[in-house]
Image (cartoon, rainbow, N blue to C red):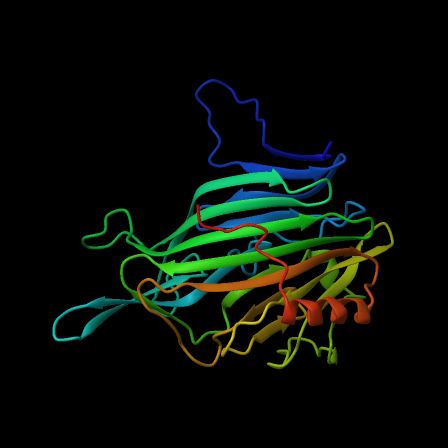
Length: 314
C-alpha cells in the first residue's frame, strides 16, 4: 500500500469564522514533503521540505512579498484582441507582482481544480487546472480569462533528495497571447532566509555564481544550498526542460531567488489554439548535492523528459 497522503488543512474554527483558503499537504510515510497553497494571486508550493524535514523555501518575504516559495508567473503578458482589417488591440497584464507594475495591472491565477493520486508506491501525481485572469476592467467585471493552464507535479520522495517534476501547459483562452520579453518569468523559487546567510552557496554546471549575478543562457542547472538550522545544510536544485527555439535564461541572486524562463530576450507568440508546454525539475536535498549527479539528470531531461505521466488535459 502506498504511504502517500494528500490532505487539506483541518481547522477547528469558532462559529462564524472561516478560512480564506486551504493548504493541501502531501506526505509520504509520515514525512511532510510539500503543500499546495492557493494564495490570493496565484497557487504555489509552500512549504517545501528536505527529506530530513528542513524548511527550504520562503512564502512571502518582506522585500518581495510576491515571491511565493515555488511558483509560475510572468510580468509581461500581452493579450491581442482583434479589431478590424486584421489589426488588433494589445491588452497588457502582469501575473508576477501583486500590484500594478510599470503600468501593467496585476492579474490572478485562479485554481479551478486540484487532484492528487499515487502513480505507484514511489511516485505521486498532482494535476491542477488554473485560469490566468486579468484584473476587473471594463466589460470584464470578473477579469477576462487570458490563459488556461494545465499544471502537473510528479513527486518522487527519497532518503536524501526529493524530486519534483513540474510541467505547465498554457493555452490562450480566446485570443492570441504574447509572453515577454522579461526576466520575471517563468519558473521561480525563493529559498528560505536562513540559506542566504553566511555559508550559502550558489553554483551551476558552469561553476560558482557570483553574488546577485545572472547565470548565462547556456546554463543547464542552478543549485542554492545553505544553512538550514541545527548545524545542517540543505538546498534546492533547478533544472529547466528545453523549449525548442527558445533558449533558457536565468536570474539568480544571493538574496534568495532563482528564476528561469525561455522568453527573456524576445516575445514568445501563442496563437489562439496553440499550446506552450514547458517544465522544470526541482531537487530538494539534504547536504551538498554532487554536481555530476545534477548534470547527469539535466542531460537526461534534455533528451527525454519523463513526463507527463498521463495526458494533462481531461
